[in-house]
Image (cartoon, rainbow, N blue to C red; front, side, top):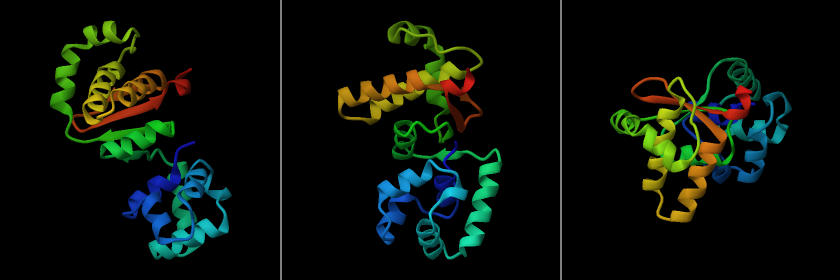
Length: 177
C-alpha cells in the first residue's frame, strides 16, 4: 500500500518529522500509521494533522482517500527522502531531481556495472537508473559499509525506470511478479 500520509503531508508543506515535533504524536506512531489505510487512522492522528494543517478532520480524510484511490505517488526530492523510502520499502515512489546527465553517463557503463554488481537489472530502462542510484548513494554517504548495504538493498528490492529527464520510478520487484 502506498504511503498516503507522506503524500498528503508533502502536499501540505510538511513531513512526519515536522509533524511529530509540533504535536504529541511520536515519529514511530506516525511511521506505523503511514503504512495503514487512511480509513484506519486513529482519531488522535487525524486531529493532530488537522490542527497542524489547518483543515477539518473530514477534509483531511476526504483528501487522503482521493490520494489513496489515485495514481499519485510520493516524490522524493532529496537524498534523505530517497533513503527513507528505500529503508521503509515503499511500494512505489518517484525520485525527482536534476540527475539526467549523470544517468546518461551511467547508461553508457551499464554492462560494466552489471558485471561488477553481479546481477541483471532487467530491461525497458529499469536497470539504467539502478546503476545511477547505486553510484549516487555511494557518493552521498560517508560510511562505506552503510553505502554498500543500501546499494544492495536497492538492487535487491527495486526495479527502476527512467520516466523523463527529471523523474525516475522506483517500484518494489515483488509487485511485478
